[in-house]
Each structure stands twice: as C-alpha cells, then as structure tokens.
Image 1 (cartoon, rainbow, N blue to C red):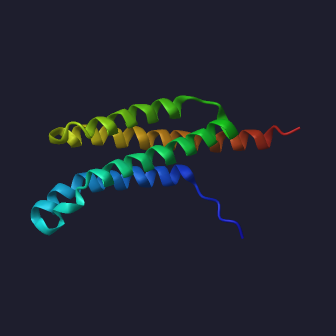
Image 2 (image 1 turned 90 degrees about the vertical axis):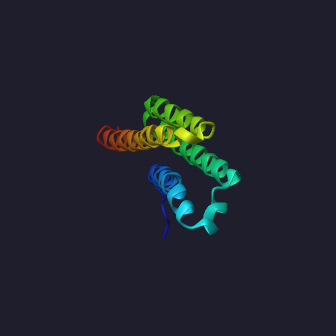
Length: 127
C-alpha cells in the first residue's frame, strides 16, 4: 500500500499553522510568562524555511508534471515576501502575516486546482 502525500495540502496546513502560531503566541505568552521562550527567532526562521521548501517542492512538481502555469509561483512569491517582511516589523506582524498566509494558501490551492484540471484533461485526451 503506497501513501501519496498531497503537498499542496501540507503547504496549506503549514501556512495556517504558522499563522495560528504567530497570531496566538503573543496572547498566550503574555498570559503565561513561562511560555515566553517559545517565541524563538530560530523557530520562526525554521518555520519560514519549512514553508519555503514545502511550497517550492509542491509548486515545482505541479508545474513540471501537470500544468506549466506560473500563477501559483507568483502568488507564493508575493506571500513569501510578506512572510519575510513580517520578521522585520514585529509591531505590525499581523498586517504582514495575514496577506502572507492568504497568498500562500491561494498559491497551493491554485496549484492543486490546476493539477486536478490538467489530470482530468489529460485522461480525456490520451491517444
């Protein structure tokens, strides 16, 4: 039995978990001072690297294998730029995080839809 991983689903989940972490951590840390060490710069950059690796792998696979459409890369790039920017403007973190997640989730969703439509299209037109 082979397990097929939906990398766009992983990308969406990673983006959403990152948003939840960034949005809720300041509230939890202020309520429970013992947890303030969780807001670790290495952890933050690690999550950003993970989002980048999962995103690029997923989008590249969809592009090369299914659709040859650059739109998911454009959406991901915009979202990733917001994600990086939030690291340098901590007081406005949510203003950058929200569009980052929206664009990155949109990139994965668009990639997924393009892959599904091309897969269906290619099955109907096989010679």
